[in-house]
Length: 288
Ligand SMILES: [Zn+2]
Image (tube, rainbow, N blue to C red; front, top):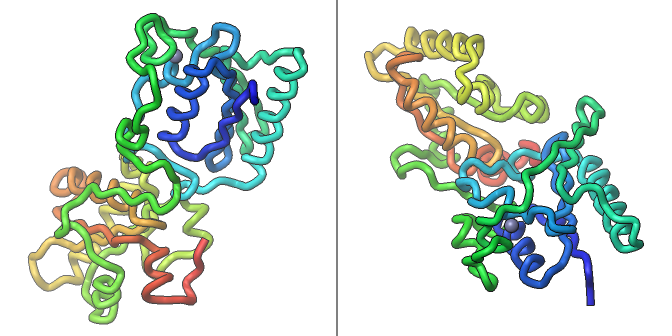
């Protein structure tokens, strides 16, 4: 027997599964999450408040979700969120009650700040807790979300085969000293841990937001490689990240920029990223 459920999961399908199970069985759900330097806490399905689906009726596109495996998390942050989660559970269990039923508590570890935002109320149109629910039993949540119920080994497949090279292919490119630009799209904090020599670091977020100074640096580096190349061929740009997910997104962004914001380039993703490099090419390259 149990009365309160704590969601400590790390992926979207499991969050929907646990939410629906709690609504269908009438249990309160104390939900916490953490990513990088931020944490969030809410109590769902509590005293007439919203459920997770009321707030997030549709799962996000899988390629827009950053999980801890890709984005990283500072271990202390989930520790703090877990303690707060335990606190809310004890308050509810002891009858003191929680004030997180219709608000989201946000913790910013960088600025050492907590703030709360009020959530929208329970939605009459909600698919599981609304007036005419369409979800009346548990469904296949991996199909519903289009992603696996894990944050490990998540492999996006956004590109065609000819837009990708293996780490072995890239090693040959280095061995032949082919002119190219290696673009590392991880956040700077990860690049500081380890990076391949001569890579240019421009985080994916800067590419997506077309951050001016970063785009200028990119243009300049492409121009330098172009000068070194004797042919008129497009400058080959190879994009790398930790696991090969963000790099695929970056290839898509760069392809859109090619010929407009930057000179024409041929952009390819390095499959599996630096962790594949460490496993298959250079065992001394750090894994993190
Ligand atoms: Zn709902």
